[in-house]
Length: 99
Image (cartoon, rainbow, N blue to C red; front, side, top):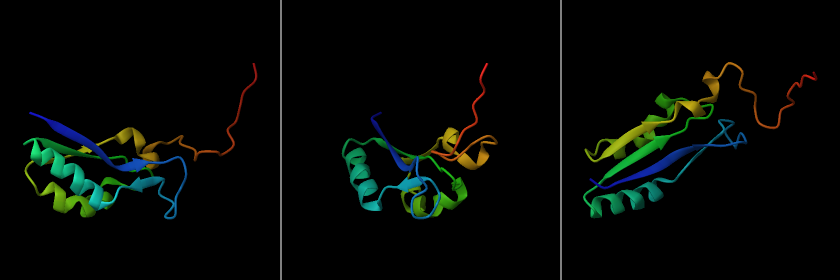
């Protein structure tokens, strides 16, 4: 079965306007990609990289898409910056150790 994979929320190296270190693609872009999947009778995977947000906060805007049986959710937990105990924001000073 054909499938398309769209990273609909992309983790970023800068905080952005809302300070969440993520970029959300517009619904219009999701609609275009979804139309391509439907044209091939395929699946669409919407991937979320939450940055400093969280999955529950990202789901409401995707709900309309995810209600379709041919649209599925993918989550990239390695981009969840709030869950990383030693995460430091990009461009922050990092300690170095000389040996």
